[in-house]
Image 1: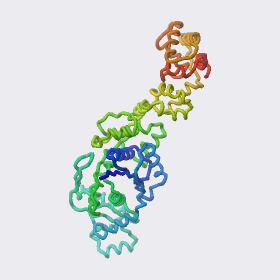
Image 2: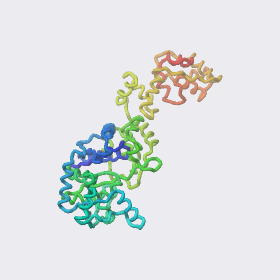
Image 3: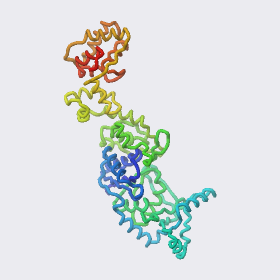
Image 4: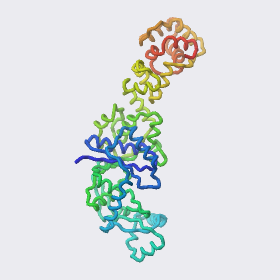
Amino acid sequence: MTVKTRFAPSPTGRLHVGNARTALVNWLYARQSGGLMQLRIDDTDRDRSLDVHVEGILADLDWLGLAADECFRQTDRADRHAAAFDGLVASGRLYPCYETPEELGIRRKAQLAAGRPPVYDRAALRLTDADRQTLEADGRRPHWRFRLDDRETAWDDMIRGRIEVHAGSLSDPVLIRADGAPTYTLATVVDDAETGVTHVIRGEDHITNTAAQIQLFHAFGADEPRFGHLAWLLDPAGAGLSKRIGSMAVGDLRDDGIEPMAVAAFLTRLGTSDAVEPAPDLAALVASFDITRFGRAAARFDPAELLLLNARQLRLADAAAAAPRLAAIGVPDAMAPAFWDAVSGNLERFGDAAIWWRVVAGPVDPVILDDDTSRAVLAAARDTLPDEPWDEASWGLWTKAVQIRAGVKGKALFRPLRLALTASEHGPELKKLLPMIGRARVLARLCGEAA
């Protein structure tokens, strides 16, 4: 059997990190198993499905490197959904219902007030042919429900273990809306069965759906796939994520300069007991992936933790990998290895490299401290500044000479020099930056000139 997973987002909003984790886990499981991942755009909700969201989903998955092996929209298979509907009607498993959403809402409130679960009571099954004719003559159009067998449905979940759900705790699911459109439940089971999906890995909010869907698979004469339900991801405040409000959107992380591999490494470990570590590439994540490591408890997605991992992720990159991006900010190829070696350990985002390139190439407005000690340090620095060529040893030899001439050491020595040369309190080692800045710029900045 060839393993086939699927990621099936609905294009009703922006992809958030919870959706991205589902896509990533499906992709990793498929790749580790030598199988395929299907991307299915669940666009049966025609009122809220927008092409701009489809484009956003594709862009986000491309950025993360999660290439699908096949891709289609559910609406492209409308004829197959209609045929499945006709078959279920013929077999007697579907029945028409005429309640409005408002009527169903009132009924649910009454059930809850009476201490009963808000399960549909199958009132539509008690309608006569005459009742249905009257309702339709009044303009009512039916929605169609799938009649569940009154039995327990169980499966061995890939993540949560044995799960058992009795149909008596569920409402018969609506498969066709009053406007004739198929619901998620019908379309997803038909598509999974007919396109050969073997493993369905999705969020825990689908657990109750799974019990009904297994019965629907059986009604079609198909074997159900294996199921795995990931625990929710929460935001730092403990709230659930929502693509409709754009919370923790993948596109925002991209725009904020976060590395795609940092996102992938973070999401692969989030919700497991494994330490969150950077990874060199997706192949390394595939090699170490174990779906059974995910726990049942919800995990919090903290952007601050992701930013820390992003910095570590950047330090994994070598100069050759960074060179094209460095060239885009003006770093010459010949200087790229030395520059990346100097600055990579001080970056939270790759975009920070542009700040340090400006320190190297200028102009920089030096910060000159106005106190006697600092003035003495800068005067000594100008007097003892050695001739080029410079290497990493030059900084130590020069500052030793400044220390002797000015009679100061420690912070009183190094702070005025760093502020004059970089206009910053902190940053990469100056022994590495100094040879790239060059003597002319160093001397000008020591004199308080922008250079």
